[in-house]
Each structure stands twice: as structure tokens, then as C-alpha cells.
Length: 251
Image (cartoon, rainbow, N blue to C red):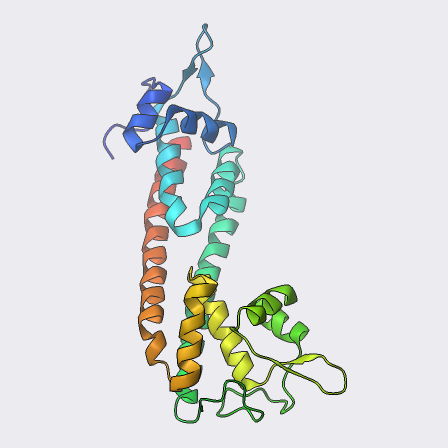
């Protein structure tokens, strides 16, 4: 790590900025946001940073790829105000989300493999095929499905307008009913959206799965999502190492 974080050297904003390819304004913004501890000021009003601030900046930039900007910001703010347990809780939540993403991906792959032998080209069969069908033969309504996926009903309606999910309508009430095929498409769409895919990118994949009756069209996309999850996991390790170094320096 080079120079000790606890040494007493003084650094200008431009020194921090150049070391990380940032602008001096970005460094000032990070301080104002609480990502960096407050800097001392010279008699002329200039900021005087220290190696401790450099360590905070390294920790934040290392946390970004694994946790995202909002969470990385919240972690650093918590550490800088002495709420280390709160920072650890935020980190735990990110790890839990990563584990949930892995489980969801495995579940989608398993469901698609199970459906492959029996799925037909009918985009919305009246009788859901295979073991992925919901326990209720009548299907599920928009509210329960949205809660199951952790999204808003409006999101499901948006996916329907985009042709990604095709619920049928109850003839008596007019309510949307999601049978096994529609639930499968909603789960696929949800997973791919979490993987960073746009609706227009997902649409042809869903259409191909409906027509082909298998996971082959999704193999490349799901493989890419596997790689993204692995990259996130490794980035979290890197972020943890830099944060630990910063915590030690603060002590």
C-alpha cells in the first residue's frame, strides 16, 4: 500500500484527484457528501488533506464496483461518523443481495430446464406445462406475483405492454391471471433486468424461449450474468480489504 496512512503528510485536492484519475471538484464533492472525513483548512482557507483522506478515497472507490454508489456512499458515511456497525450491516445486506441473485439465477435455469421438454410454441397456454406451473391451476393475480418478485404491479404492467409477459384475463372479473407460462416469463424478465438488460434486449430472448421451448437462447445471457455475479463477489473482497485498511488507519 506504499506510504502509511497514518503518516502526517499533507495533500492538496489535486494530489488526491490525480492519483485516482478524478477531478478536484469530485474530491471536494466526496468530502461534502461525507465519503471523506472533513479536511482541515489552511489560514488562507485551502483544504489540507492527509494520507487518511487518501485511504478513505481508496476504500470508497474499491467499494463502488461491488456495492454500487448509494451503498458505498452510505458505508463510508457510517464509518466516518463512527457508526461502524451500521457500515457492517450495509455490507451484510449487499452480500445477502448477491446470494439472493445467485439463488434466483439458479432457480430460473432450473425452471427453464424443467420446462424445456414440454413447452410448446403457444405463447400463453391455458394449461401451464411442467413442474413450473403454480399450485393453483387457475394461476395467480398481479398483486401476489409482484410481491413474490419484489416489484410493483406497475412494473408487471410495463412488461406486459412490452410483450414480455402475457397474462390472460379472467372472463368474469377482467383481472389479469398469470398462468405457469406467464409466471415463467415474468421470472425470466425479472432476472435479466437485474442483470442489467434493457426491455428491448429481453424481448427477443423471451420470444425465442417461447418458440424454441428451451434455455438455449438464454445461455449466453445467463452466462454473462454468472460472470457479472462473480465479478461483483470479487469486487466485494477488494472493497473489504481497502475498507479494513482505512478502519485500521482511523484507529
